[in-house]
Length: 230
Image 1 (cartoon, one colour):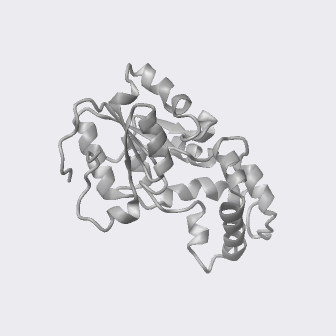
Image 2 (cartoon, helix red, strand yellow):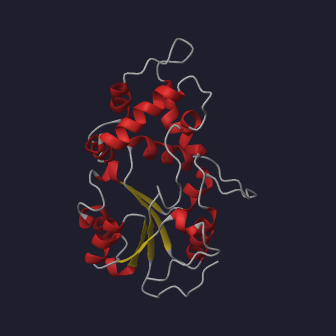
């Protein structure tokens, strides 16, 4: 439940994905399954990518490299039992399996009911954006009680993804956010960013917005969601 009253000037909440709404990786059905035939190969490839090739990760996030190019660079040999495009499909399909921060989603739902727009603002890859688009096409189950990837996607009024914006949030918040704000006749002073990275929060505040550094692991240690403490 929310512990504070929403500031009246806040018209939109921009919420990050990884570290805020979910902690799960791409290819979760492989990386979290030690018995999967590709587990070791993919674990080594992704660990090398995300721990030692951060520049390539940023290129992927900016849309300058595609998921297909990243997968090709792994130089993996899946074996004849797997289709040639297996990893390409799974990097999209497995997004549906990501576990969601249910307390935060419920709090965001409350804010949306009160009239606040909820926009996903994520430094993320083309495969994630494609998974979002596929989830948006799914019929919403009115009786669905479990908060899933698909149901969370239905919450968003819009999606801002770095692979589409061609820039990371911290590199130029004006370029990342300003066009969307202008279309809504909002300014940064009408916006709150929930993000796990301090640098993203700092540049958003410098642009004139409100920001709350949000860490899902820390949130799980508390009994409530209070993102109006800004």
